[in-house]
Image (cartoon, rainbow, N blue to C red; front, top):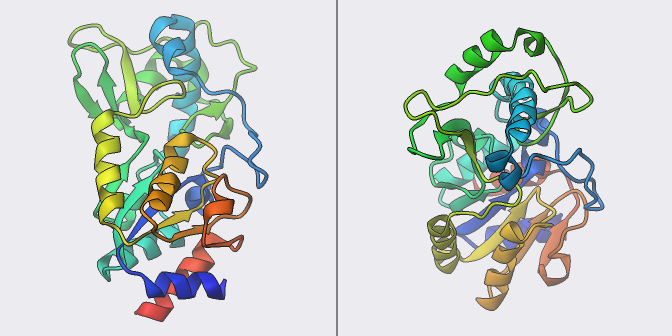
Length: 270
């Protein structure tokens, strides 16, 4: 860990990429174990959600249950320390693969939500956008049999309740055009908006190095930052409890708990 801290202190203006491991201490689970192996039930994919009514029934039945937890999750020490390091000028930009909005709630200002957010919903037809919270009342009033259910929470706000029959689930539609409502998160099988990727790449160009916190980088959306940093001959530091896809190209890495390493870094510079 000492080598990691030394590298972090040596450079300023880091671009930080965070994954599910950062939110784990807030009770939000990760998708993969420490070997990078998928450990959850398959999520609803983008094309399924858009094309199949029963896929939307499955999604909203899970999401209605999971939202109760996600809306009450609070930032943990890692979120707070990263926000403080930004204030001190050590972090240029934070790019998160998480969709929980906890970085902003902890005080981070310059955040790119790479995979979007689950606390807002949009119509895919007329593009009306509104907060997710008011929709919970509609879901519970129109689906009382599901309202009292509990399930294991997933990182995207779903709950694992697939063993139940959700064929009677009433799905919300846009009140203005009748279109399909979808949380503003990038579903599996969908693409990250090009402008968002371009903004993130521009931040990597201006940063002095790349710090990866709590991500296995198993998906290309996160791993590409390591490729960019390598091409730019910039240091790559990884803090993650488990293997990552970029271990071989990182200049320093540690398996220590995210919050403990970040706190040591903050103590050294404040």
